[in-house]
Image (tube, rainbow, N blue to C red; front, top):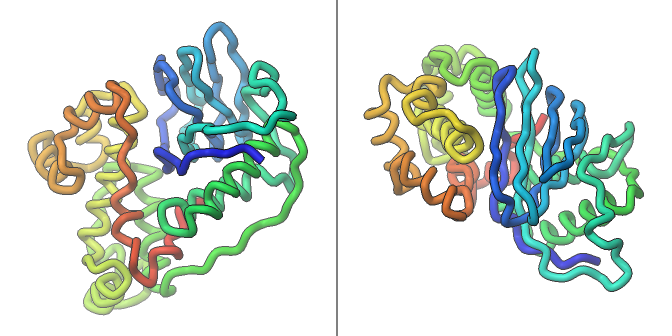
Length: 289
């Protein structure tokens, strides 16, 4: 079984039609799951198609880049890791595929879903074993499994969260009020605030702000958009307000974070994941539907 590090970066990212990411110099390994939309992946001098549903394995040793779907948005999950040891009988790395297109009932997508739902929250050993299983299945091509069930949040909080998540995926800058969230949750605004406070320690409005900041952090780490453009796309009134809120959440300005990531720093963990950690709702926040 391969020995892997704990994920050094993970999350979800959404790109508008025609966007590009890179080029970048790979310093670690990264799995990318094309949940929605097609892509074209370039690793060194090799270019391969990555259709919707496929899994890409980015690896060190070359400069890579993505060209996202030209006609519709692209949504993908990702996580970075290091390989610390491989079994003697493991296939040579130069034979590993860059992309696999799983068939129905595969093991790769459920394992990826499981990782994104639990990484940073669940058992660290189980996370590494799941990653090792996924890498072995990807390299060998031996895949088959079923869905892994996950619990839900309190129904009203889950409905409100689903509304927030889906609205921001369609339009990251969309205006969302407490009344909108309460209506989606089918409870009063006052009751929704109490439920969110119990689940997260924060109000629905504060949770919404962190959701916007998480999307902004992903764009800083994984796009070529300017800080002002990211602020506008994610629904902040102006770059100054965005920078102030961002520094409060992440401890550094947007430009400082982008510069650090370009210099090789690991992208930060989602503030929403941290928010739900050590609380009853921590393991129940569904990030992949």
